[in-house]
Every structure is written in C-alpha cells, then in structure tokens.
Image (cartoon, rainbow, N blue to C red):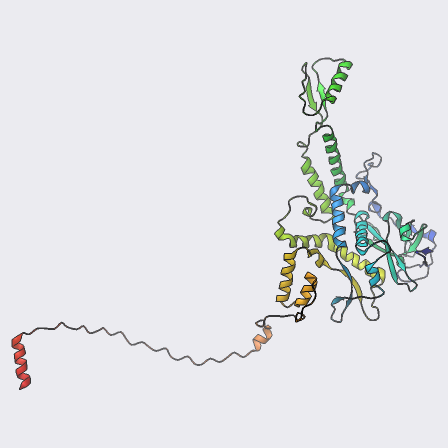
Length: 462
C-alpha cells in the first residue's frame, strides 16, 4: 500500500520485523470496554434511548472542560523540545543531528512544532489516544509526523499477536483511501488504559456527567433570565372560571414586562413551580461541577479560575504541583513515544540520543523565582555564571563567567579530620594576689604645751 507517496510493506510483527503470515481479513478490532469509544457514553443504562447520552462535542462546550484541555495542551506546547545526547558521564546535553533535528523544527508541511504538540496532547486528553502517522524518506528515516483524527483510527489485533491500525481517509495526512498499516508506521500514545493496553481512556469518561450537569444548570439559568428572571408558576383562583377568562388572564400575564406590579383580583394567587437561582444555590453547584472536572484532569482548580486563588507569593510551589500532577505524566509519555517512534531507543554510531522538554520555560515569566534560583546555583557552585545567564535569562556569555565558583571556607569533612591541630604554649600560673592589708590610720597631733617643748630642747642639746 502507498501512503504519503511511499510503499508501506506488511509485516507480521511490525516492531520486530517478522514476515507477514496473517491476511487482513483475520485482523480483529480491539475491544476496550466502555472506555474504548468515548464519542457517546451512557451515564446509566437506557440513557441513549432517552437522549441523555454524553457526547464529547457537548462536553467540550462546558467551560471547565475546555479550560483544562487547552491549559494543559498549551502549557506543554510552549515548552521547548530539544534533541539531546548522552555523554560519557551519563549527562544529557543538547545537540543536533541531520537525521533527527529537522523533524523537531518542522514536523509536517502545515504545522509548527508547537501546534503539532498541542494537537497531540489535545487528542490524548479528549479521546484518550493520540495516533501519529510517520512519513519516511528513501532511507527509512522519519521526515514527517501527522497527528491523525482518533475517530478515524482503530487498533487491530492479529492471531499471532501483531498490532495493526485501520485508517480511514484523512487527506492532510496523505491517506486517500481506507487502509491498514502495521504498528511500525504509527506512534500510539494512549492515556491511562483502564480496559485494554491499546485503548486509552480520556478524563472526560470520568467527568462527563459533571460537565453535562453544569451545562444543564447553565441552560436552565439562560431560560430563567430569558423569561425576565421569573420562574414559571400557576395562578390559582378560589372559585370556578371559564376557559375564555383563563386564556385572557394568561395572555395578559405573559405580555407584562418585568418591573410591572401585578394586581390579582378575586383572591387569585401566584405559586412558582421552579426554584430560583438563590434557592437552588446555582453558583455553588456550578463551582462543584467545575472542581470535579479539574479533579479528573489533575489540575488545581485555581488554575482554571475556580475557587480561591492562592497568594502570588507561593506561585512557584503551586506551579510545581500543577507540573507534577497534570503535565509531567504527559510530557514523559510524549518523550518516550517520540523516541521509540523515530528510532532513538538504540545507540546510533555509539551515541545514545533522546528528546526532552525544557521545563524551565514554565518559570520564564516568574522573574523573582528565576533570579533566586540562578543566584543560589551560582553561589553554591552548581552552575557557572554563564550557564545561569543562558538557562534562566537567555543571555550570552561574559568574559570570565565560564567557571563555577565556591567560597573557600567550605572544606570536605575528610580533610578537616586529617588536619594537624596547632600546639599551644603552656599556660603560665595565675599569680596569687597579696592579701589585703588594712591601712594604718594616722593619729592626730598632740599639743604638749610650751613646758614639754622646753624640756625636749634641753635633752636634745645635752
């Protein structure tokens, strides 16, 4: 068969390269239970006969479902995806390769890389499966990738365990007629497989009922406000009334505009038949349905403007929560599926290649967090100034900024244990202070008189 101008050969085991031993007629469609084909789902037995089925097109019209799908898909699409190679020390570094880099820049003739990723993730979130058709050149190298419409793709199983995919006409992907291709020509990235390994289940399978409830509330509210915010009711009269009088009263009642004062004669009484928005707690009910949708998509409710928005000072931890729960499982699965699909699993000429998203792009507008992370990385020697400028600010290198620095007082414990401690001189004895001596008190002079002084002079002269 020919797809995209190339001849696609049948293989019994597409991933291992065996010889086909099964005819197309022997292929059986995969049965995935209730979660396999989520175009229409019954919330209860018999709902389809009562026109109460859950249709994906209707569910997508509900605001929280649309917000979750677009938020997740666009958040992943804005991350730059780069080709990396594994160095000898096990570190992955960005690189380029003429066989793999072109398709990362331009996956097909009508989409940019961002729109390609967005469609891949959107298909997975809405339908539970993403199918990507490969376009190869004469060397067998993948040079184009086309995200297919999941409603026009069906996995098939062969008796020998080989996997095939039935494709209906899709002109943009170069499929002019319905055909069957081996698994080697399709990248299949399923959501959580609850029923069959080849059948992913969309989050809409779990939140479809809440979404339909939210739509019903909105439709009811629209009808209420279309009738001037007046719920329908019954006019009762105490006695009998003719049909002509009843029709006249009903016509007059309906022709009145909002704001008019109704005068009910003859003991008439108006009884509303429906709850108003206050009695039904309309806002709380809508908020609950939105929270249930966000829960199924593993998205914090505040990310789609439901509930209380946390303080912006804690934005980085909350963004980490959103990435860990809602984005990381999808990006990891995307990288693994892409690497297997384009042939990056095995080393090429002794070099192991791969692809990875740059999750630092999520913090690109959070200047405070980027500045703190860059400063801490430089201060603790994890990055050189030039590496921090490139990774967190998109700036070019500076002279002398290619070396990582660390303060000198940080020493390994082993070296600190081996160092020789300096010897200290002996400590001289502490001098003992002399005991305290009481001061001698001086006696006041005694005047002996003139006779005593005369006697002293005589004795001294003799």
